[in-house]
Image 1 (cartoon, one colour):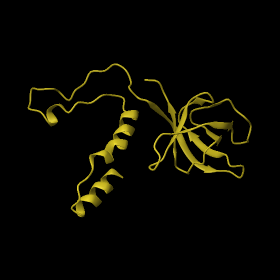
Image 2 (spheres, helix red, strand yellow):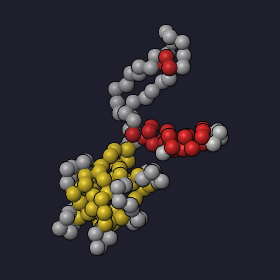
Image 3 (cartoon, rainbow, N blue to C red):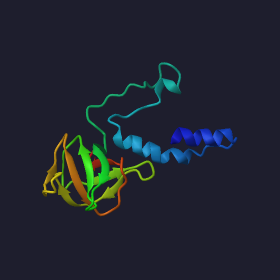
Image 4 (cartoon, rainbow, N blue to C red):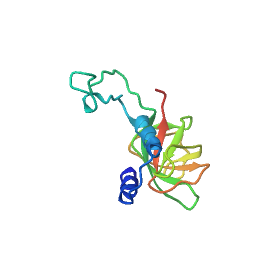
Length: 144
């Protein structure tokens, strides 16, 4: 999306607004597990290094899985790669709406039995308060 926007502006000889990239930078920093410096990329050699030292994750979100499609009851079928509970803060991400908060009103297995938590490498049904789109990313907010 960022590359397409830049290309479209440049072929029309129009400047690319730097503020356009703010949402992409926010998304990247939310899922990054390290900090970065510009180092030798913009400075003379022997000045600030691009290597950084860190001993902890700086992620703000954790990828849980993928939203596939809804069933006849309006529940969303999701494949999970990580676990979560009903009390976790859940978000969905699409190219148009990154990190939109959702509130589950129901969590079910594929046989429509209520469950308390989603388990890794499983399929679940999720009932939420907002409409979702297929291929949205299911995300959990984490404290940094």
